[in-house]
Image 1 (cartoon, rainbow, N blue to C red):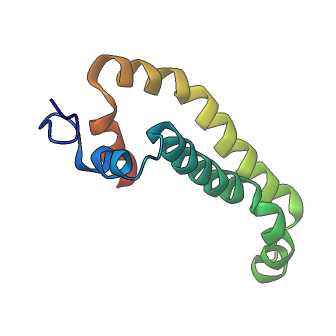
Image 2 (image 1 turned 180 degrees about the vertical axis):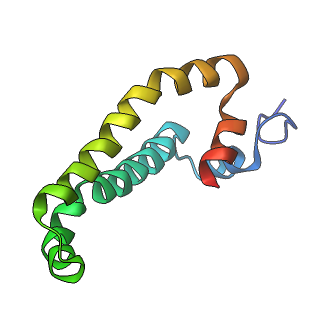
Length: 99
């Protein structure tokens, strides 16, 4: 039986099978792009500090404190979110995270 016609295989996988592209490379490319976006957002604050100090009239300390608090909260809730994903799956958590 041809695996391309099998109904349990997603169509995207079938598309890459026809083109002889290993699906693992596609996953690697998507995850790498997502990582690039996340890193850009995380470290992008350094680019914005100078304009924010001028616009808001704040010093660099309060801006850095806000980013530090964000990182601390993210690190503290990561184990809780991991347990939720293990118990209920990632789909529901992704819906809530996108809101």
